[in-house]
Image (cartoon, rainbow, N blue to C red; front, side, top):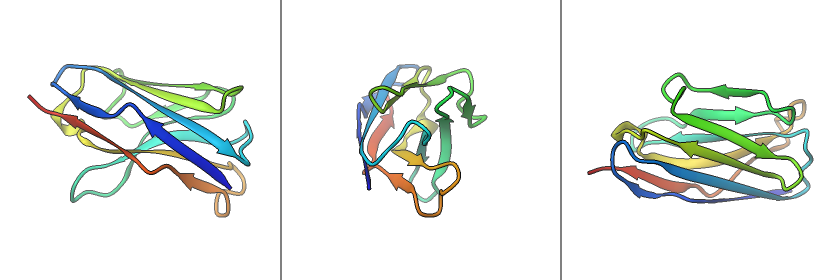
Length: 119
């Protein structure tokens, strides 16, 4: 089992910044792909960004150029630096980790952290 704990959510004004962190523990290895998804009220959960153990990243078009994902393999942590936040970024953000080959049986989620962008 893998446990994921997020931190860093909160309320921020439009144009502001927040940094989310996720710490993984348990039976996780650096091979796991880690990333962030989000779910706004009434909408499906969507990928925000993910990063492989080798540092390859993938971003949703809506956050490219504003969000940056980073990873520390030694500490099993990932961060999401969110800049130029918009009201439409408001959502619950979930940390995710999965095995790139055995995803069906090794796919884990954190409890989520609320991000609210509002004036």
